[in-house]
Length: 143
Image (spheres, rainbow, N blue to C red):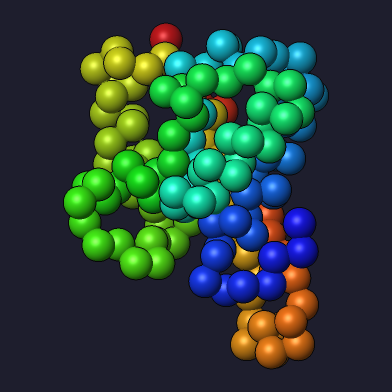
């Protein structure tokens, strides 16, 4: 999407997250209802909303309750978060510290975790180049 603003990392990473999620469902011929929860990390409010919009535009029928973001889950709504957290750090913290325990308790049986990242450098920012981003999906199922 050509985002070059380092203060909008969620927006920059949203296309990578949505592309990965769409490819996952297409490659495995699955519907979003297959998973109890699809989580990204850390897109924040702007990135999550952008990703959700991109998923809807692609025809992927996923509910807002089913689609969450680890960065938003780790902070309270009233906390002044500013720039959020690390995508890998938020994904790992929420997954290993919270979601896996909920899976053990039977709250969730199938989760798709989509960690996001970016290759941002001061030089590319100064040259006003877009921020290259990536997302990796891991499917976790518990019987």
